Image: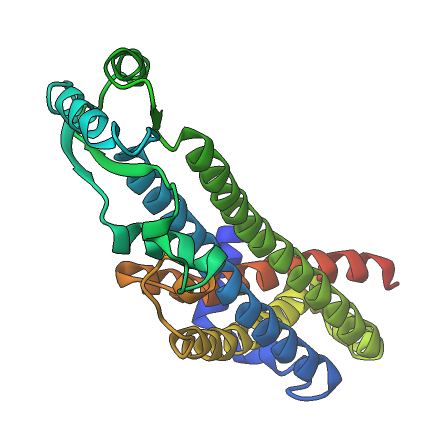
Length: 299
């Protein structure tokens, strides 16, 4: 019988086969606990993967659309060069807006490193101009050449050196999240296989009697597969529900930090609902493999 037909038969149920496996005991508790624990961890791994993906997209989009011009000049020439920079930016294709940053904004940028009492007005700090790009963007090399000719003290920073490491790190976190889900599934399959082996070994005498009365190995294996798959589904459902509640109770945030942005948004909440069926599939194939392998070894 094919795997698809066995799965359909499993969903319909088979009361005769269900009576072969004891309804309680160590293997039952182990299977339910393993499925619940793995599903709970999988919820957080899924939240990590999805949040890292959103973070990579958000950082990439935000930094790709902004740039900064840093202007350093003597006090007597600062206003003149600032006006030249603004004129260059105003006439540059691809620049949507450009505005000089105020002293409070520059103070806020320096505050994490120097504290709130930094006397910005008494320090020879460069002037910062915030530049926002259009959808098409601008030619950074051409703009640097124009700034070098019109305002020699101006330096363009298009955030490339900041954007790439941040996006790369977020992409790696997303990959680690999906890898974790795969490892969790493999660990759950291994644990369920061990539990099925234990149950089959403990019922070796029952299996021999069933064979004597004419039961085929497919019938015996289906009994163990049905029971262990249901246990895995129940445990995974409990673990998934607990994980979703735990993620929902995590502190929110504005999304600028990673830990405060860890969680599900919108339709992302539908993803964890796929974990119990996936756990059931893992349990189905793991138990099926273990059952037929062990049955071949029982004479």
